[in-house]
Image (cartoon, rainbow, N blue to C red; front, side, top):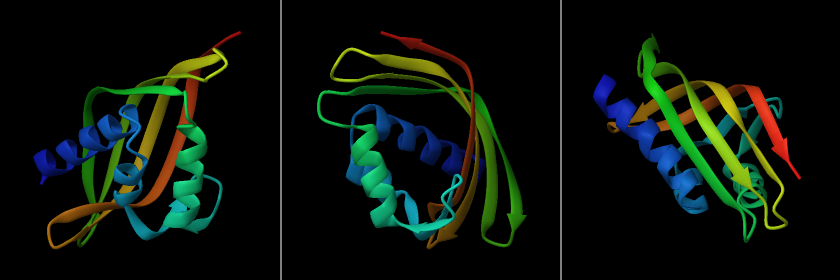
Length: 128
């Protein structure tokens, strides 16, 4: 299960780095406890991702090391890991740093999906 979930997480961040909003959204469950937004739908996440990946933006998300994955309940796992991120907006302004991520991942027919997401950003740098 560890390798399946690690591959899922790496693929999720690859999709984000490639601007594949539909692919990113497909990785979420129908309802997600999303950051500080409460429980939201995929439509909410899609709107959020479209803003993050606005036309002309470039996003890079790279996992740092291997995630720590633990079974939290039958058919549910918690993954904790960090990513380096770098986002350049169409106007040239940029943000980069490290995001410490905690996800709860459910399983349906051996297909993982995100049901809870939290992140703490650190080492944040911003450019003009």
